[in-house]
Length: 368
Image (tube, rainbow, N blue to C red; front, side, top):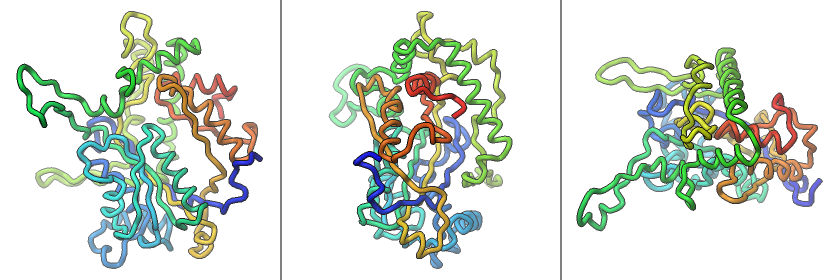
């Protein structure tokens, strides 16, 4: 056990986990803001107070009661919520999500921006808050609506003196471009491909396997227990629609077309990263409820998991693709467990090359 482990600290448990379906860019969830999506996940974990029940949809009450029947909104003391694309959402998106979900004004709320690690860092901060005795029940998660990120007109405030103005895509500027080189993150994936000698064919094959796994899991209903369906109001008197499945896996997979797609970022014939072997633009939100051991027992809650440890790692910005290979060993040491004892590893597949490179560096089998 490493000296920085959590064994000497109070245990922290996850008692509820819920997420929205994942919508495609400008797809089924495009009408919902990040605040609405984030609020929905919190509502679906916390039963409304008696004063709010008449205004809350029945399905939200049912889902909440199924997950944490003895939890009340006022039991949640603090929220950490990841959100990267905050433009035009208003102040402190985490607090908006909390209050719109019916949590009391006394709930302490913090928005976290650590790009792709924002939600995970929120969980770490929540666990640390409980371990240090500052709270007993904390919500952690993240929310994004890439479909609703605005364009910017930087010269508007001081006035455009002469000539044409250029709109800046907030999605590219704040979410998909390296802040130091101003290059698209896809070029970092190409750099990873070169560094680790991962050809296009391997990336396409990995993408196909990943899509097939998602399609099978969706078909078999494996994601259903964690998804809180989102009701989209109908326009002009039309009935509402309910989104209850991830959108992308429902689309047919054309393997031949995937393998034949042109490279997206390097177009001179040497590029390997394409739209389908990279992650799509998406909308969605997720949240967990973390509690102390005393809170767990006092409310007769059944834990889903115990947080054993974590690990953060950073390196040169363009090398972010292989940061998991540095963070995972730190997390294992912090938790006091060996890699051979882990049943499943989950690595964010920002690009197929990310998954392949980190498996290679860590010596892990894809089956795990």
